[in-house]
Image (cartoon, each protein chain N blue to C red):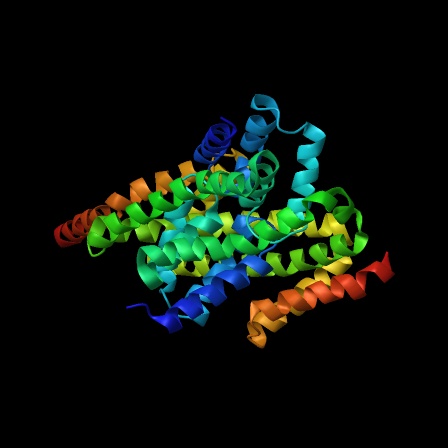
Length: 179
Length: 196
């Protein structure tokens, strides 16, 4: 019964969540806290805090945590499948359908017209992330890190992995001495 | 036959994105793009943009949808499953291991400082991607139409807070008719010019 609830809870939260993992956080909270009472609101906030200090998609981290709490590793598997499988299958089906008609003017027009929307979506994400950065480490540190990252990525074509690792080290070694 | 070198590339890419992707699924999009387009040349930038659009128009986490598509393109259905698993494995294992200590972990300022220092890097990568897609819109649609459409998208998303999936679907719907309308407009202008 718990497994079925895990499956249904995460399935519903993610099927209704448009805009990626972060958009489905309130929906997951509704299932986890209000409907099934697996966690209190305070505990859910702690899970999010843990999720934010780890890499990877937020929805799958919440699903892993809850699945493990409720039903061990089998619970992890069920919660993850419910979170990930329907949307992944949907994208594969849709793209197979589109690949068949790639040369048609209808599909070419669709492909062209999504470019401006994606540009704007990325711009809004940039603004939001920039605000997050400034509110957590201040404008000066954010600007320094961003400037160095920009030159490393654009001018010297450094692999993003190294830039991120360098930022990590800076955060561990330098930032604690500045605040 | 399994293509082992492609399988190795796919695993490397997915693990790398899974371990380094901070800031939630959407923030990780530039990392996926780097691996798929710049590093391993699995798809063109156009196909990546198109896939991203359709991934956003569907519900659910973005990172795992992109993993599924890339895995599928590289190694078929088995590749899709492999890519999703490898992308979420590192953070899932870490979540279970650290769950007991989760309240303490985030209160270590070092951990918080490390994560915070990565956010400006992610911001720069997102800004670069915004610029590149804006550039592509300008080349494909021209400056006036490209700018007008971006302004409309900006107003809908930022000002009226329309859900991004709805905005994408609206633009896709217009896109289905775009080339037909352009042709009509050109013949109309052509006729007009002929009469004058």
